[in-house]
Length: 132
Image: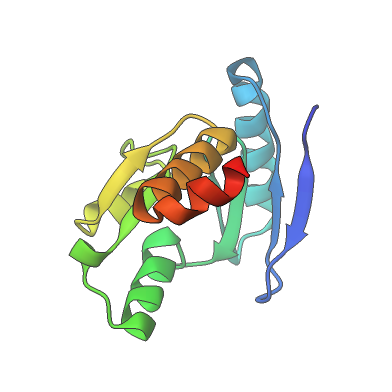
């Protein structure tokens, strides 16, 4: 597999992301099923096209976004969320169900490109700095 990475979140949940092509989706789903059977106290979901999410039960992206919004005193109209699984059952669907504006991407690289483009439109000085 190319481009795999491992990062640790402060809440000690390990996130493993792989740059997989779609032909490996059945293997990823098999891994999700295998992990779910062995982690009965946790929620194990197929993440986007590149990950498996393991969290405490009831904790999903909508939970996290809701906590962030409360902490920053934001409303759903203040937030833009980028994800790759907005289909019913997808790990990004709960955020969409909150009524938050969402942008669908296919891979993490698409997220990076979208965010960089958004920054350039919001801060024209950043584009000038990149050019010099």
